[in-house]
Image (cartoon, rainbow, N blue to C red; front, side, top):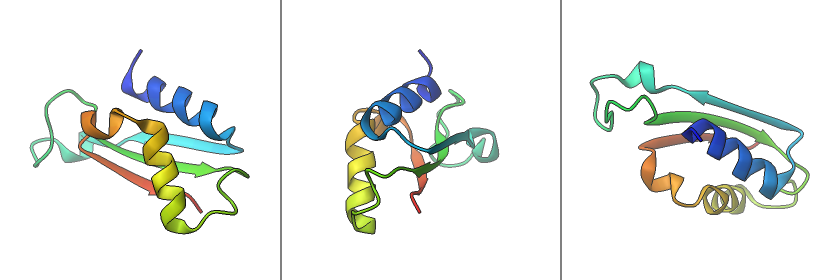
Amino acid sequence: MTVDDLMKARLTAAFAPEVLKIVNDSHRHAGHAGDDGSGHSHYSITLRSAALAPLSRLARHRAVQAALGDLNTRVHAIALDLG
């Protein structure tokens, strides 16, 4: 299972999102700090879920990071848009 697939599976299971968009931005960071050459170093995630709606911005970010688990250490950078 790829990093993209793992992210999608974990976030879907945790939040049943109405919107989930995962974009691999690694190609835009080739040769920069954090690029390990794997093609899975930088991501942008847009997620909308009723489960996150009552939470503060900080709590939303913490909840998503918790759901991603070990992927936080496997991926150099994850930009979150949690609306």
